[in-house]
Image 1 (cartoon, helix red, strand yellow):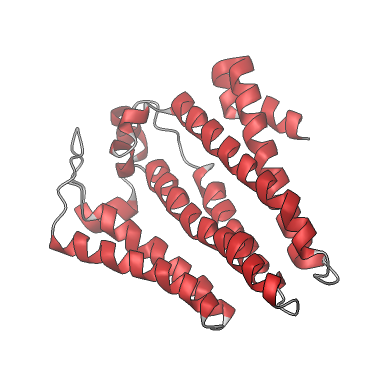
Image 2: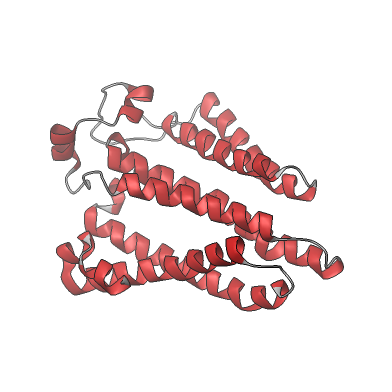
Length: 240
């Protein structure tokens, strides 16, 4: 199935065998990491073997993440010039790509909580149940998949100027900058963007702190979503 998806992918149509192997490796890495995560978090009967599970799953997840990151960058290079990453934000594709990348950060925070912090706590208290927090990590992955689904419905920015003419400017871009489409985006951070950056970092810290203080799990998820929103606004207000 992974090979079939790789063969029918946009990357394969653009760069035959390199595209096929890159997309297949990317999808396989995500399938192994998130697939195991989903099964364990929602269908485990108990957490008695959690520490032995983490001993092999944590390095596997780290390897899969690094593989997905490397192949993801290569896949981006098939559809756009990497130097035009920020310039593509004027397009719906660029907006969804940015949101996807920002959504990965809360996922890594939850992975840090589940792979390191909970392991340390379980070493001294065997009654700690890690499954609710692992389910939060899986929900965070679902958010990324939802954004990826929306991303797949947009036209890739092979040529940004031509895509703007045919597809128009992103409605999200218009909220911040109207119909202004610069030929080259430049970063000019100001006080509002600096303040939003501090707020976004605070949201990440509150996500970790919610674990330490045993706050409701939905609060941690909400803090992760707030980070995505604030970090997104930070970047949108930092460019012109």
